[in-house]
Image (cartoon, rainbow, N blue to C red; front, side, top):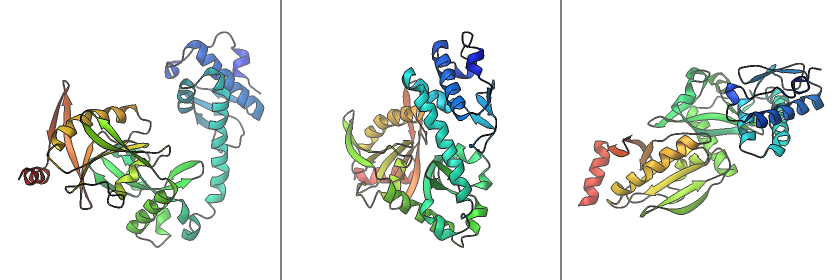
Length: 310
């Protein structure tokens, strides 16, 4: 069995793709990689493109990515690298073994119904693997709701070909996906101060916190004129119930927060703001330039502002 670390113990330096590591950190990372594959008795070779080519294995793959697990290790202590790497790759093995059984029942709607989920994604996500291979609907701006399988070890896109065999409409499937997420992944909602204004913060340590947008009315999170919402990433949503003209100043305080949270991630969804009212979502466009914020409200939103002023 090939052992990368034993052959290069003193000469390993962090490559460009892992430049966030120091050389010493990268050596510990490679040492932990080597230990994992040695214990599994799997030969491997690290490539220059942040991937690892592996011999016969239980992953169901010959090429594995290293970027995500490397970033995960970088955020933790070096003594935890092996545990993090083991958890990451063991999850891949569990996913592969589960998928083999799952694929045998995927045409049976009653068997897979409990795995359906509706999740919010940025528009760019639709390009991966092709829009034609996804079941989606645009929410507002560049935010889409996508139908996925929420599996024990992975989230997997549902294709139109798979759904065609279930004899269900897309609306029915989206509704079931929202219902499943609602039951499995509750969010904590707290009141937070942003400058002079108070917002509602929905959070969860899962990937479905933005789904709160489907429950705004159910949870009484809207004002008389709706709500302004930010869904910066998969773990959070910011909600400002719309009651008075204070929204004009509140939005300028909320925008930088949402924009920064979206960039920080993980799992960025959008730096857009959404205006919700009576079941309808609309993007509230803005631009940040030279630390100045310019907002471009629609005619419909301007009409609401005028009504509030009366």
